[in-house]
Image (cartoon, rainbow, N blue to C red; front, side, top):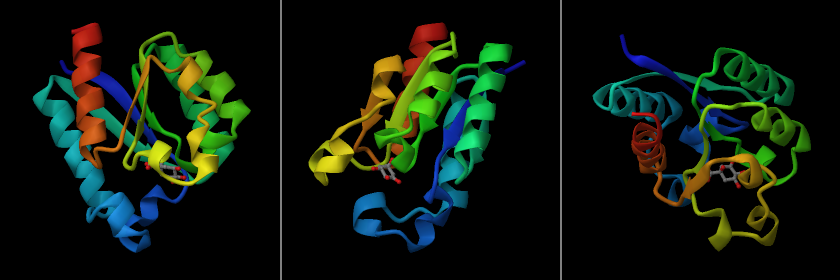
Length: 145
Ligand code: DQA
């Protein structure tokens, strides 16, 4: 049986079809989800890929991962930069939790240079488009086999 991982995507990521493709790439959300699921399977994981625009829903999913000891890959999107509530929930996850971003927030506007999540993440992978998630899957594999 494949090990489950939870992949959480934050606000506006379901609308990649209408976001700036020069920043976020050409995949729509459905294609991104497929890309993640296929990469997960090929590395021996079953990815449960979810998206929400709602902070409290994301917090609930992190509680679920904490309770079930599920490894997490999270792109908190704009919540990255200011949600202490998501940070506190991410801190409850004892299995590895990896922060990912499609773009490289450090090369963008100043407000994106702060991540309140990074301090409680095992590590952060940013700037590789959909492959940020693939690299996170490889990192998870190395961490937990
Ligand atoms: C993002 C970067 C964030 O700054 C932004 O708010 C997003 C997406 C990324 O994946 O590059 O919505 O997390």
